[in-house]
Amino acid sequence: MSKKPKLHSERARTPVVPNRNEFENYHTSIVGCLNFFVKKYSDSLKR
Image (cartoon, rainbow, N blue to C red; front, side, top):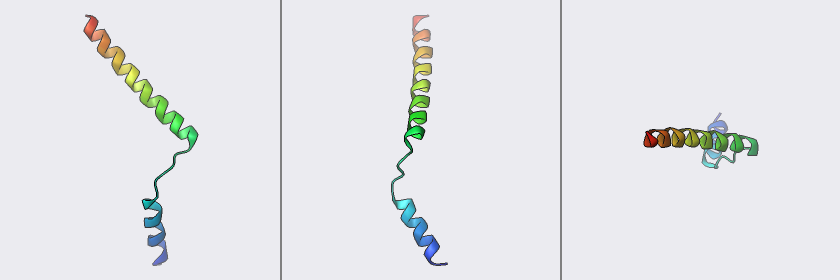
């Protein structure tokens, strides 16, 4: 029982290396959000 928490803490300390597909999805979603806000902002500036 004392071994399990130790393993967990070791796991928590190691940096999470995301799956490439996951990273792509994350990146595209962020870029999409940025594009959306930029569009909104530029539209409000034009008016």
